[in-house]
Image (cartoon, rainbow, N blue to C red):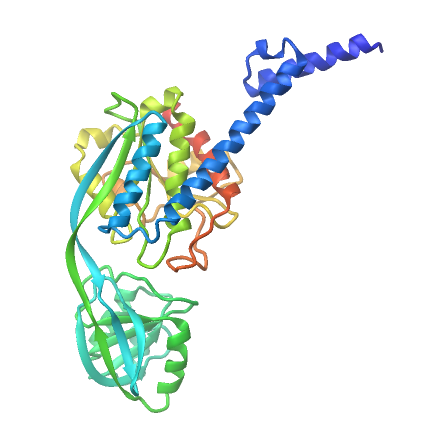
Length: 417
């Protein structure tokens, strides 16, 4: 075979590759030009990847993003600026809610004070009483095995909800409850419903030795749950192209974090992926069918997403094909997608490698689901640094993978009949 024929075949292969990756065939009039364009595309993709990771780092560097604090004003200003750079108009949707605040809670045993965390929703209280260890995880049968009447009960976290442990404690006559973490680090938790006794959480490092100690002789202790509620203002960031008043799809994720945590994975990761999707879609027809939202107040009880759906007209919500939520997508290799069964089946058909699961609450898709909007939830599962000061790292490759899967699914949902 002659060198001329070899060059011709090589050029033809380049043309075919260009067609497959969507490059204009004019770019392959000269083989070197085709290589330059393909290399240029790779550089752009790398830059996008770096930018998504940089968004996470920018949010993390602000410190814990707690709703109602000055840090959130800085975080919202950063997001507004980035969406505007990408060609979107933005709105800061403010809302007010009553926020739980721990002013410094502790347990004092034999003169030694142990710092703890008041569970969100607890009643405040100061009291002195015997400390009684409850076996297992605090089910009704566990409380029946010991006498906690007039005592402060101490029990391990796990298996049942905090509120159920507290209700079982109160029903058994306990005047207070201490919950010990079943993994390293502090507990930042929410009761979720009204409980009549003060509830304090301790880390496993602090609490486990205490449980062992009090099983023999219950000491008298002082419990101080110093908590209050105050009104705060949250800030949702809503971005869309000019003139798009009725989207077919909403892409969202919360950008607040819990106190003490910089919230890299929870949830700067989801916030950055939504921003990456907006950048990737900005010059496509899909962008004219989409709104992008960074929700505030999620960690205090989904307040931002609830405020959004409560303000929206029913006709606006009924015309949505989907709300797609991204939460904790920067750690753990396995990407999971949950939500409405028809949409999870749709996602599984597009990418069989994705793990699908049923719909459940706990993040900003839930208020939309309550209003009948089909939902998808991108989530990579729990990890050891969840709600701790160590939540300061994500894997850039996982952000990219989530973004790509999200792009594929969002485009298909918008274009589906």
